[in-house]
Amino acid sequence: MVIDLARLPSHGRDVGLGVRQSKATRRVPIVFVGGEPEKVARVKTLLPDAAFTSWNKIRSALKRAIAHPPENPVRPDSLLAGYSGTPLPKKLGIKANSAVALEGAPDGFRKTLGELPEGVELQEETRSPCDIILWFLRSREELQHGMKSMAARTGEGRLWIIWPKKASGVETDVTQNDVRAIGMAAGLVDFKVCAVDATWSGLAFTRRKR
Image (cartoon, rainbow, N blue to C red):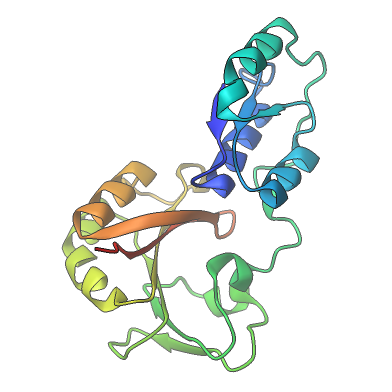
């Protein structure tokens, strides 16, 4: 399996962790390609038996990986292993003195966020200007119905579209592909994926530069 770490490194890392978590795919050779050195180093600590290379060396790396698959693959403790020790506000890009809108957030989410950077203002169900919108939804209908207004509110800030994971037990018909496609159709571009907690996944968008 070839995984590109250049565009969405956290997503690529999570895909690799998922491959190792599953008994059916655990012995599949993984080849990570590209990426910033610091982020590649983090993935190496989680999956040291994977191969890491550049695109101009991909052919030889694939040959080696196929010829020498891992005999005792490293199995991460959980799919959240890549996020251990990283505070949720940092993962979401919440910085000091920023205004954050919570739209449809589940009960107790303020507690889930934990300690916030100094001066952060949380606003619930607001139309006031803000730096980050955390939009929680549970259905494709919600996504389609609300996307236009959320895209308009994003301005120069960041919009997180957050939906239940399939394995969470929360009923949903939303997929990451749905979120990406509908967000991009509204003039936004995705740039980061995040496991918010055991129930919720998120995809971050910003306005596409012209």
